[in-house]
Image (cartoon, rainbow, N blue to C red; front, side):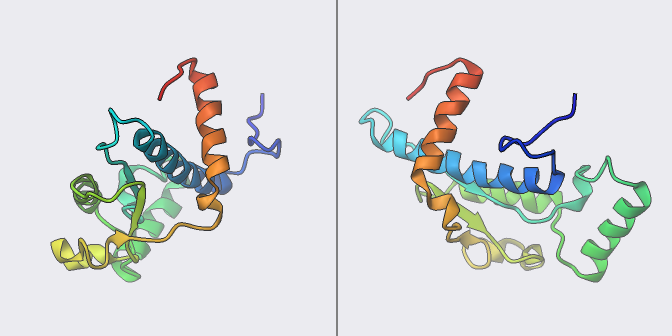
Length: 154
């Protein structure tokens, strides 16, 4: 059976990837809203982030090997827009140590060249798209997720 998108359209890998990032923001914002609404969980902080393009993680493992190799070389060595897996891990550690609530962290491509100095400078809280600010969609995603996994929470 062919896989299709939630909206019923044929599967589109690029759209699925972008939608998954949007859903991460929706889920983070809705989780923070639910945590803040409960006195027992008000102090818990949730955030999400994009570490940037990390080409050496196997993301392109199902692509043509020549394309994957060339893309990695161009993104990493020529255009210098790719980040390292170490940068991705350091980004996670940085976001986990922040007190912001329900925020989205992002940096311009190639920010890992600044090392730890990028954290709080290039890599910082960024505004989310207008669509990602739609709290009704975030709530709907949460409720659909609860039904799909059979668990009711918060």
